[in-house]
Length: 115
Image (tube, rainbow, N blue to C red; front, top):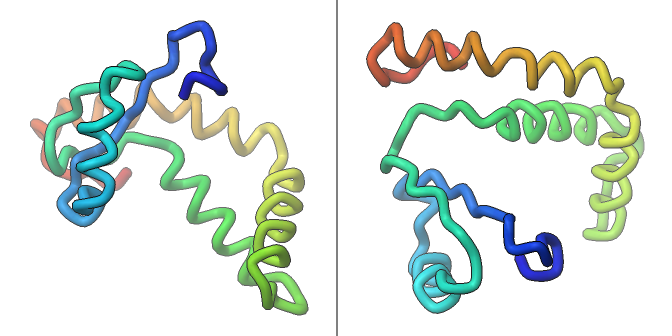
């Protein structure tokens, strides 16, 4: 965090979902929590983070590649190339979807929505 956000303004967002809270991750967060700010996010909260959509799009883009990646370096290259091929408008559309996502979340009183 200190490398990426040397200004001290970086924040970690962790959704606290049970399957994301491994013993190793929890211990690391406890040990290094004084090194960065941490969003206090409700456990198992509905996901409003556009990164999930991006991961899904990257997965599908990599799965379509021929030949498929065979090594970790091939996978890294495929992910990088797929990321670079995303039209900027795709990412902008995700950002612009945030108000609708929050309206759905508030309307449904925190129950998971279609997002």
